[in-house]
Amino acid sequence: NFFKVIKTDGKNAEAECLTCGKIVKGTVKQSTNYLSHLKEKNHETALNGYLNFPKKRGQAKRVVLPQRPDPLQTKLNFPKSDRGPSESSGNSKAKTDALIADYIVDGILPLTTVRKLSFKRLVNGLSGKAADAPILTYDKLINLLDQRVAQFVNDMKNVVFNTKFICITCDAWSGGGRNFMGATMTFIAPAARSVGLKRMSYVIALQRFDGAHTYDRIRDLLLNLMEKYEIPFDKVVGVVTDGGSNFVKAFKEFGSKFSDYCNDEVDAEESISELDVIDIDNSIIEALEADAAEEKLPPHFKCVPHTLHRIASADVSKLLTSNKTSAVQALNKALSACSELWKLCAYPKQREKILLVCGKVFKKPVDTRWNSWFRAIERIVQLFDKLDAVYKAFPDISRLSDFHKILLKEYLMIMEPIANATADLQGDSVFLGDFLPSIFLVQQLLRECRPTHLTALRDQILASLDSRYGNELSLESSDNYIIAAVSHPAHKLHWIRDAKKRKSCQDLLYKFMQKNASGSFKSSHEETPHQPSTSSMLQHRRLQFSYNKSSSSTTTDSELSIELHGFLNDESGELASLEKFPTIKEIFLRFNTLMPTQAGSERLFSFGKLILNPRRQTLNDKQVENLALLKC
Image (cartoon, rainbow, N blue to C red; front, side):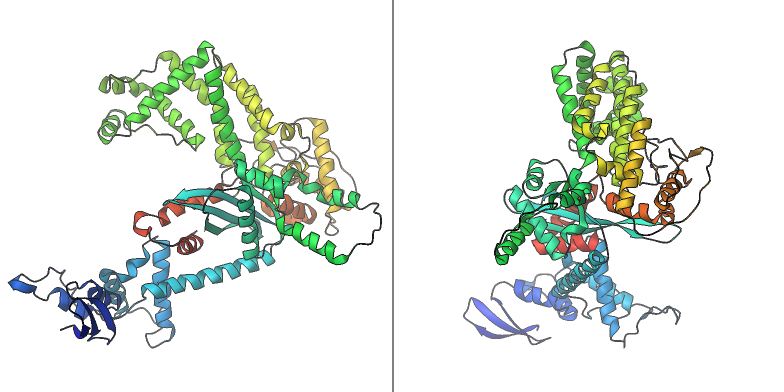
C-alpha cells in the first residue's frame, strides 16, 4: 500500500515509495528504513496510514495519537501593516526557515526537532498550511546554520577592521567526553551620547582540542584563531587566561608580559639609536621576520579573580595545615563541621528535612569557585539560630560550638573584601582600570580589620597579596595598570593616598597624553569644592569606593595640562565624560580595552554544557562550535 517492491533476494529488498517515487533499500523482515523515509520526507498521510495499518495474524491496529482537527482559522489575520511576507512571496519560505532556526538555536533544542511530527504540525498549523506540508529539513537546517556562521565570521572581520583595540579571553574545558578551547573577543565601542562608551563581547571559538593541552598547541590554536578573524597582532592589547602552567608557558615562550605593553614604543626607539650597517640578503631578513611574526603571541594577562581565588583557597589551606595555634586549628574543625552540614543536602530526604527545619537549605560550595565557599559559610552563619534543631534532627553529625561560631564570623569578616573583589572583577563591564583600585582597597580593608582570634589568617592574606601583587601594590613596574586606573573616569587618582605617588601617577598620565596626543583641546575649568561623588559604574559593586569629585594636584596652562586638570576635576565619573577629553579617551581605550578577568570564556562553557546535553551528544565538533557562536 505504501511501497512497490522492485527487487529482492529473499533477505534484502529495494522498494519504490508510492508517494515520491524514491527507491529505498531495506530488508524483508524489518521496516525501519521505509518508516524513516516516510518520516524524513514528511509523507504524513502515508505515515499515518502505515501506523494504523493492521499487523499480521489479526493483531490490533498500531497505537497512534489522534490527529489534530483541522484548524478553525486557516490563516492568522494580522493587520495589513503588521503582516509579514505573503505565502506567494518568495521570502515566505526563507522567513519561516529562519524562524525555525532561531527557535532551535535560542532554545538550545536538538537539531532533530525538525523531524518530529508534533513540531511539523505546530509550524504548519501556525502558518495555516496542511499538516503534512514540508518544512525545513534536518540537512537544510545544518546548511542554514553553516551560512549563518559564515556571515558571523565576516561580520566579526568587519568589526575587527573598524576597531582599534581588541582583547581576547580564552580557557580550556572538557564536556561530553571531549576537550574544547573557548575564546571571546571584547572591545569598547561608541554608543549613544547619553551612554558613552560601551563594552562589547562576542564568542569567537569553541574548538575541539584533542590530546594534551601543550603550550605549543595553545599557541597554534590562538594564532589560527587570529588568522580566521583577520585580527592583526598590533590590535590585540592582551590575551586573558587563568594561571594554568600551559597557558603561562605558551606566552613565556612565544609572547610577552602585559607589563611590557606600555613601554613598547620607548624600547623600540632606544633600540634603533645606533646600528651598524651590514650587507645582508633582504630575502633572508624577510624570511626571518616572517618566521618570528608567525610564532609571536600578543601580551599575556593573568585573570585577577583566578589569582584571588588561589589566595583565598590554596594559600589559606596551607595556613590551616601548617599553623598549629589553637584558633587556627579550631577554625579547621569548624570548617569540617560545615562540610558535614553541606553533605546532608546531597540527599533528597535529608535536604527536605533541613528545609522544613530552617526554611532554607545550606549552600553547597563548588571546588573551582572559592566565592561559593564563602557564600556557603555565610549561609551557615545566617542560620546559626536554627542549628540546634538541625542537630536534634541529625544527632550523628559534628556540632559547631560557640567558639566555632565566633571563628566563622571572624573568617567572613576577614575574607569579605577578597570575596567582594572577586565578584566585582568577574563582571561583564569591568575594565583593567578597576584592577589596581580594587586591590588597593582590599589591602586597605584588611589592614583596618581587627580580628580577635584569627590575626594569623588576616596576616596570611596580606602576605599573599604582597607576594602575588607586590609590584602592583608598590606601583613599581606597573605603568600600564596605573595608566588604566587614572584614565578611568570613576577612579582617576582617588585611590592613591600617598601624595608623592599621586603626583607621580599624574605625571605618568601626562607623559602618555603627550605621547598619544590626538589634537588640541581648549577649555577652561574653575576650581570646584571637593564633594562626595559616586559613579554609576561603581554603585552596584560589593566593594564600596568613597571618592571626592576632584583628584588633581597641579594646574598649568598648556592645552594638554588643561585637559588633564579638567579631567581630574570633572564631577562626572561616567564613561560619557571622556567625550570632553579626547586625548585621555584615546589612552583609556588603549589601556582599558583589556579586561582583568576571563569570566567571559568561562561563562561560554556554561552554554557549552547545555549544547552538549544528553540529547545532543551526536553533534560533531563543527556543529557544537556553530551553535555556540550563534547562541552566545
